[in-house]
Length: 310
Image 1 (cartoon, rainbow, N blue to C red):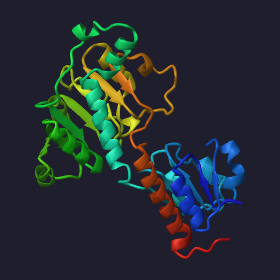
Image 2 (image 1 turned 180 degrees about the horizontal axis):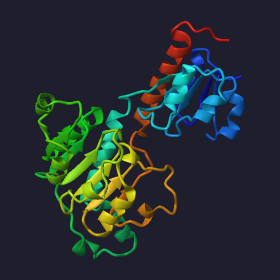
Image 3 (image 1 turned 135 degrees about the horizontal axis):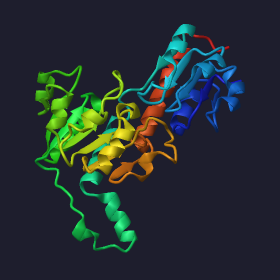
Image 4 (image 1 turned 120 degrees about the vertical axis):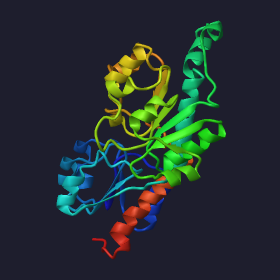
């Protein structure tokens, strides 16, 4: 009998905290439903990561009281099915801010300095690549942030330290807030694209795809596009076309429309495209903070509000 099913691996500190609170924990070896039906039949809590939690999985969990997202993303959780059952859905915002911001900066630098291509060249014995490959300095260049939440604000601080000029577009943050951070507020997304050498995405796909072929065409020639937010923000076929036509200088993705990325995806063979497997928030420190935070959310839901263990 399990009180809490952990669908995907989390740091051991979170598991220990759950057990210290008197909860029995089942850590899944495989997130697929067929192997989880037994543990889910008794579970009152589920902890999930990018796997989410579907309506079918909710239906297989008759005692479920809370679904906890290890991180901020709840896109893959069927929140409507949960609401119909009165199941609470919680997340852990802010625990991976530093890690994702650092990963974003790493991707920007890797694109600007052609790090992946340079590494391949050395391994292939092509040291003369240094005479053919051009790189750019980021100082004095314009960074456009799509969204201005915790992570974007941290990225803005890093970019400012490099001497970049930073602008942002946001549905929530105002001119005064941005001005205090030394960030200008763009009139709209198209204006941001037209004025930026690097564009970094830090928002949710509330209105669907933000970067389709039309918007990609509005980016400056040679611009760099980085996405550590949500895969659904970019039309991946349009991105491949923009890179193959040399409209874009480079791009880097840590998130994708389908995860894991299918081996036949055109992204796999696209030039000047850097891919990482959704590891922006996977720093050791962030993983431990998030595991402890998500454990506390579960404990609060099952124990802290007076719900008895049965």
